[in-house]
Image 1 (cartoon, rainbow, N blue to C red):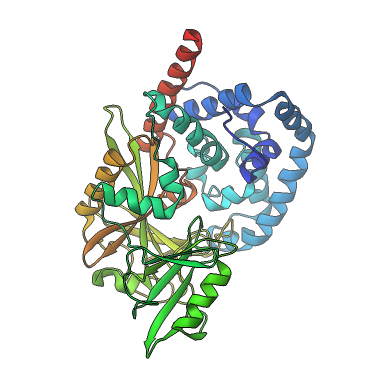
Image 2 (cartoon, rainbow, N blue to C red):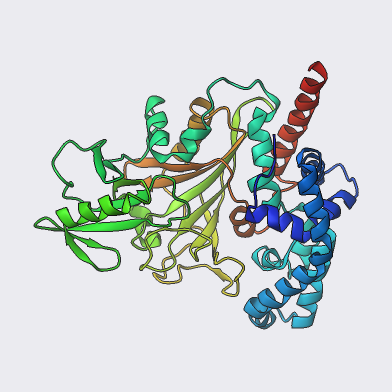
Length: 440
């Protein structure tokens, strides 16, 4: 059972950052963050093949050159703006990046993403959880062993990856989710929640079945008289829209959904795009599921149709107890020179201290969904839309990115509630893994 398979970007980052050796040298301090780092290093090394170990060793001489190149690139992107905002010189920023790479395997993009040029934040650098540890590493480890609990015969994992199955599973458990009108695959259009001919005369949102980050998604606004306008301005008839989908469906399976519109109280923040809340929930010590973090994501520019953070969207931290927003920040990958916003960049709507509508209902929905339909998943990142009719699940992510949580939350999660829950589940998983091995 492999923790990291194939030549993913996270495996490449792992090998070219020297993480396997750096994390092994971390001193034991009985913290949750250190337990997570050391568990990742230990379990990866035990489970990877001899060939993969050889590759990791062969990559070691290149680590200083990779670090130096990244320092140059990302200091060029961000250094001057950070100097102007904080007064910290370019040379000092570069030395700090080198130091963090050597001590914690934190590379230059994350120096700027996590604002580790801030001296107070840098003191807690070892508490940040790196995506090379989580997204393609420990999440898979937890999932494969079900966090140390008995493994059910039926797993919900495929229902998270497949958007159509996700909707069906949610409906099975009475969980509100976005309807699917049509499915288009290999030139064939299949009706799902639509019984009429052609396309319904409403605004539509089209996305690939297995898409991520809003890639290949389109919006078609209904103009009347059987005509639609795509988000890039092209106008097409109903037949032309369907024909285009049939042709494109030879490369991807597409789902056609109604365009959802945010609750009227946050329409000024949505900027014409569906804004969503990324909510983290994790299995706790009692076997229940607990919401630990949340961020509200908005489109920065009205020309885009998704709120993806790493594509340059804005996100603001959400107080999970009150639903109140903190300041917003842009999330273009590794380029963080814009700083923080109290008002929306384009609409100028107030962000700071805004309260999201339907917040208690959102928490209840997420916890119920995790406990009922997806209880074999230790941790899930949920995308939830707030509509006039209440919260609605859009998608679930079985390997949620913690960059957005840690950047927008303005600090690391390693020793916070999420980190403590991950450490608890990892400890139980390791105990179960080796207990099973002894029995065999």
